[in-house]
Amino acid sequence: MQDIDMAALGHQVLWAAFALSFVLGAIAQRTHFCTMGAVADIVNMGSWARMRMWVLAIGVAMIGFNAMVAMGWLDAGKTIYAAPKLLWLSNIVGGFMFGFGMVMASGCGSKTLVRIGAGNLKSLLVFIVMGIAAFATLKGITAVLRVNTVDAVSAQLSTGQDLPSLLAPALSVQKAQLALWIGGALGLGLIAWVLARAEGRSADVLVGGIVTGLVIAGIFWVSGVLGHVAEDPSTLEEVFVGSNSPQRMDGLSFVAPMAFALDWLMFFSDKSKVLTIPIVSVLGVVLGSGVYAVASKAFRWEGFRTVDDMAQHLIGAVLMGVGGVVALGCTIGQGLSGVATLSIGSFITLAAIILGAVASLRWQLSHL
Image (tube, rainbow, N blue to C red):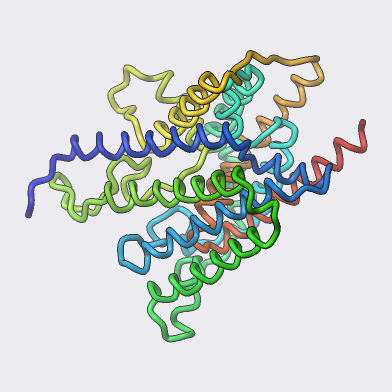
């Protein structure tokens, strides 16, 4: 067996994940990439430009991930999104909570990090509260509630919940080949829809959508290919170096990672607390946004206007922290990374997030 320097490999994985997330932060700051903003633009102004940017990112990520599956590099079943246990009620309830909360908090998890980089102190508070709420839902009081309620309702599938795994036996086609067909067809269809209108061919839409999609696929490559060790020299087991859970690869997400980042900061001297892909991704997005904001002279301090404004952001942060963990991801985690794996649960969560966001926007409009 070839000797592997696990420490050196870990450093490579973390630096690569940091670099990709840094690019994501800078591009999101440059192009105003934002899921909540995309939905709000449609509801409030009838503009689909930012939605086309987001859909373009999904299409690119979908093609990228499933091309790597077809080449034998990745397996959707080794992600959190394609497990055989379909937590459909958790996807619906958590997704709706997250979507409703992200409107109240002026953006989802990734947008919160982008805003922090540009000097938004409101988003800094949202980040702290959201991270605490997420941690409580992972291991604390709301975790007990989650496990005993929505997580208790599920469907146990005979295969992974990704479409290639579900359909391959019935169609007598290899899963990897089916992943390329389905991922390629859906991805190209989404890209075609984006480019069908002039607003989908603007520089911001193309740059924001393509780069974001490539970053999503790139993080999967970093975790699932660069960081994959078939046989750990210490345990003789398969391991994904730098992942939060060594038994599976990480996809880009920002709810639970906020909790992990706060935990790492607070218990830094505890040697068991180590940097992982989720933690460095949080830092990368903030720094990437901050560097671009300073370079473009867009950096400015911003705080709460009123007590009501603060209360609304706090409630939104709690809803996102709890909802994002319940749903197993956010607009980036489930809406991009999860959907790229063609996971049924991710499609359900994405629909619930959008419904929650629309409901929150309608609620806000009715109270103006």
